[in-house]
Length: 111
Image (cartoon, rainbow, N blue to C red; front, side, top):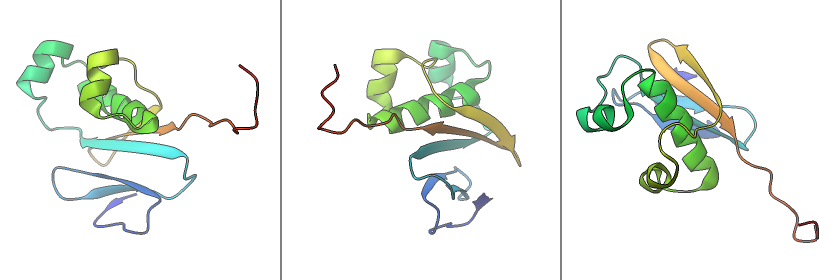
């Protein structure tokens, strides 16, 4: 859902225009969203290219969020094309949704 505030969402992504994208499903899901029509920052376009930039960016943000790693660290280690999730366009917004990796129980002795 795209709207204002959405404080009851399980997780949220804030857009540059002040709106919020909220997820109301599984709490193990991560989301990221960006305005589809906003220009790609020149330094990022020079480094990663501008083709499908916001789709690649939001999927990469999902991977960083799922791994609980700052985006700058993720980019340094994996680049922009190692993201996760599915991407849709919704009312001029690029939205990616991905799942967090399953965590193992401490009693699980498998390698």
